[in-house]
Image 1: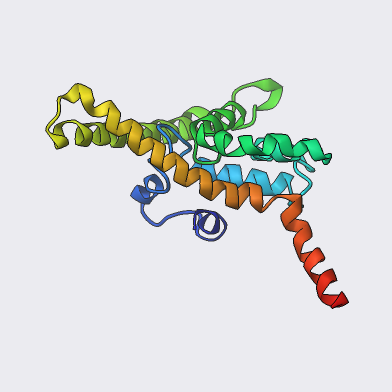
Image 2: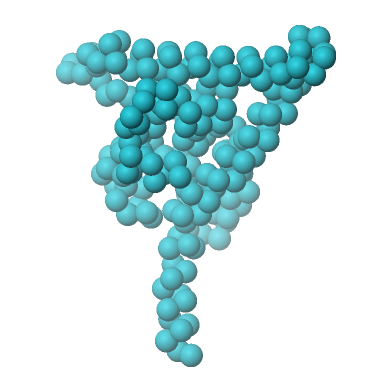
Length: 200
């Protein structure tokens, strides 16, 4: 759904809807406006599902590196690391990805100067989003401590459990959306199926 909304209904009618896209996917991640911009940059630089960064820097390129660094048989040796890469937050809804994006967007202005919209537009959006996320994770902490009749200092256990299960879910989803969809095996499958069909 996230991917379809990015392409079809990118600007929500109410501001509060900007905060409900994936606020618990990681402790800190991209605000909705950054997700839209990042995904547009991805499509502008990678028209072909298999030719990443063909027209410039693709922020999602590092999601495919572990599965496509070589077309030799030993390229499959790093594929088992893909779930871990997503789990630690390298996908669009993770903290590592947010760091990558924030270090590269908005693009520098003329002469390498800071983009003129950074302090008036992007920084406030990001600060509000991160504040909202910290508030939500504080609620999870309180739910896992006071809500369960335990001392406040015990809330971290519940936070880690919730985070772990959410990361597993988002990792599985992103592996299908990003890695499986952008794999050579998947893109060659229709050709192979059609060839087998025509010979039978």
